[in-house]
Structure formats: structure tokens, C-alpha cells
Image: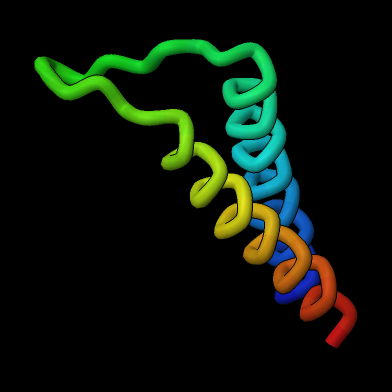
Length: 62
């Protein structure tokens, strides 16, 4: 059961990381209410989600 959870969570984090990278490459604007989310925030989200993805896939075999 542990490895299935790691695979699913790793896949979800991979999708989030890819979406954040695509947002930066295409410079898509994101607006939450009156707040415009800056592009540098997507770089941070990409690094965090990518790190969690790697961590999930590495821990999946244990």
C-alpha cells in the first residue's frame, strides 16, 4: 500500500510541477481576486512540487 501512495502522490506532484513550468514558459497571468500572482511564485512552486515528486518516487520502493 505504501508504494501505491508514493506513486500516486509523486505523479500528482509531477503534474503540478509541469503546470507551473508551463505557466512560466508561456507567461500565463494568474489573478486571485485583486492579487496578481507573480511569475517568480511559479518558479518556487515548481521547485517545491518537483522536490516532493522526487522524494515520493524515491521513497516508494521502501
